Image (tube, rainbow, N blue to C red; front, side, top):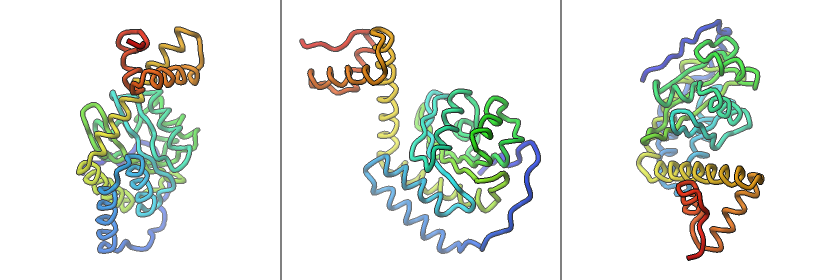
Length: 249
């Protein structure tokens, strides 16, 4: 599995090695995690399970999240363990740069030893450091057409992750990917993302047309959906395609 672990800039000294990982125990735990994820019917529970497993098993992981990427730019943060991953994903969406995008489209694993010195993403790295990001690992989870999933791990300081962190993180990601691919989760996740996009577009149309807030626009869409007994997704789709709200026949 390829990796671009050597980032530009100076790294901090390596941390003392922790206790060795029991490989047999790790294999058992990974197998159990994969089976548990395959039996989950709720996409959000699947993502939360992946994040929990990563935080539990990967050495030096302080925070974690799943990034869902669409259109080679837009990133939605899911199952984040804190506000930091959500803010970092928002910054990646804004700049169109960052490890999640590279892990999605170019590399299966991307390592950022030190955000303060990394020069690969000039519009992203320094602002991410100012948000509180110090080091990061991103692992590709799945590719489904124009939709991709990435597991992100954050270290509490620069140089937090070592070779063992990357190896175990890759194993967690691989088992999670198999579990997701072996179920209907990818389809459900990407459909949910498409629906969110449509509703966002429809809200934008109503906000501009009637000079109302996002909350008021959503309420208007919801009311129309309820009154006409039409799915919210279908109401939003008709508005974005035709420019007109659905009406009683």
